Length: 211
Image (cartoon, one colour):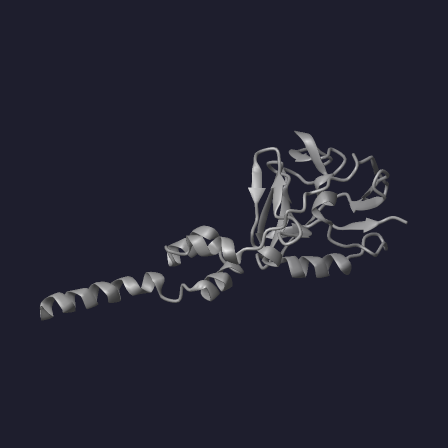
C-alpha cells in the first residue's frame, strides 16, 4: 500500500509542472505576451480558458478609397484620393511599435515634419495588386511608385483590440491579443499579419496628413 501511495505521489509531482500556475488569471497574463501554441505547451489544459481571456473585436476593417499616387520631386509621394503624403522609401530601422511611433513623430524629411505611423487601412493602400518592379528596380508587392526593394515588414498603429479579423490575398486571419498585438504589412509577399507590440523586428513607413 505504501509503495502504491509513493508511486501516486511521484506521478502527481511529475505532472504538476505542466498544470501548475495555469489558472484563469495566469492564462490571461500569458495571453498578453505569448502565442496560443506557447501557452498550450506550458499549460496543456488551457484551451477552454483562452477564449475567455482573449478579447475579440467584431469591427470590420474598412478600406480607404482607391489611392491616386503622384510622385513628388523631393522623395515623397502624394495620395490625392486620401489626402496623405508618404515618404517614397520606408525607413529600414527595426523598432518595437512604441519606438517606431516615436521615431515617426520626430521624423523630418527635406525639412518637412508632422509625420506619424500609418493605420492598417492607410498602409494597405500601398499594397499593389500584383508583384512587379518598384521604384528601386526590384520586384515586390508595393505600388511601383514607391521604393521598397524586394519588400519589407512595416508597423501600423492598428491594434488587435481595434481590429481582430482581417482577410488578405492569402487567407482570413484572427488576432486575439488585444492591445498587446498590432497589424503589419509585408510587401515582400503582399501579406498582412500581426505581432506583439514589443517585438523589435519591424520597420517604419512615415505618413502625414495633408490639409
